[in-house]
Length: 90
Image 1 (tube, rainbow, N blue to C red):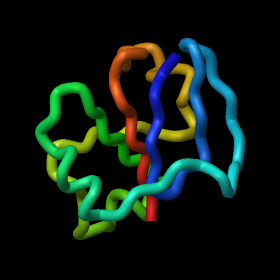
Image 2 (cartoon, rainbow, N blue to C red):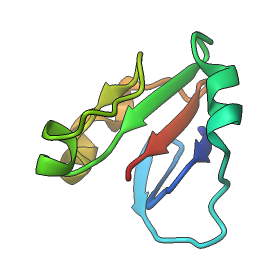
Image 3 (spheres, rainbow, N blue to C red):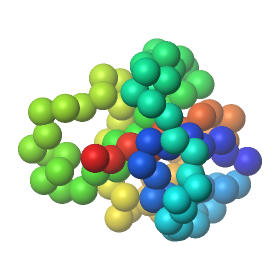
Image 4 (cartoon, helix red, strand yellow):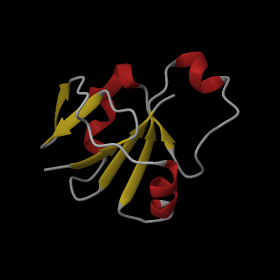
C-alpha cells in the first residue's frame, strides 16, 4: 500500500492503481511538518498544480517534482509503494 500524506489532496493512490477522489478527510500537514520531511529520501513531494498555476508561480518547493494531474496513469507507477508521497497544489 502506498502511504500518502497531503496538503490539499484531490488524488489518492492504492497498490499501483489509481483512484481519483475528493475527500475532505484526506490527511493534511502544516508547512512546518512538510519542512521537517525535506531531504528525506523516503519522501516524494509532488506538485500537481495545473498549467499556469504552476508555470507562473514564483513559489515552488525545493526538491519537489512536477507531475501533470491529468496524466496520472503515465507517472503513478514510477514511485515506490514504500515511499511517503506528498501531493500539493495551491
